[in-house]
Length: 221
Image (cartoon, rainbow, N blue to C red; front, side, top):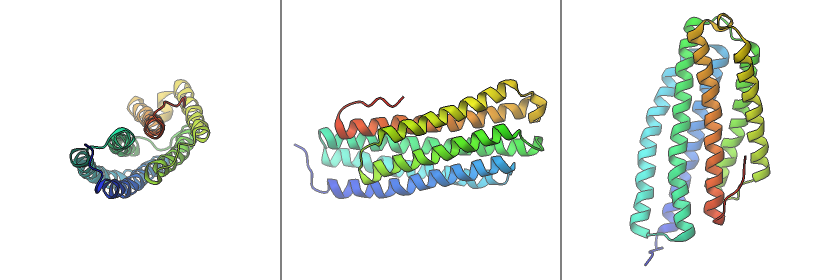
């Protein structure tokens, strides 16, 4: 028999921690992208610290959610929501890991490149701006328990894919020496790829949240 006593308060505590976790991910990403546009290698150590803290938060939140499963034995909708929160913890940690990877590539670029092509910078910045919108949407859905704004989410995802295509097209035509050589080119490819994957992970997370609230799938692609 499910034990609801304390369930709502425990889940509310998780939501508050998640809200801070989303903010941390947004900060880490913003620092990493800003370093990319300015070729600033010094940000790597700061993002690395955020990544280390994120692993601790991931561990604490996961344990709290598993404790809810053990003590409260939630059923149906509550169980789907707890499962979505577990996935969100992993997704946010992955985003911060992506930000760490971007900052690491920033460090390598700073050592090898004097200036990056403007088309690449603008595409990555455009993707990041849309990623911030995705982070805001996802955070609001999960922490305020709101429905997924499907149309807005589709528009943001389309914009990210469009900017990603511009970056990939540019990378396919620009010569390696225009980006500091083959090694630097791979670092740029890594950055473009990480931003797109982070956005995709958030889109899938929103799809999971819709299912948690409504017990039905939503087509977001």
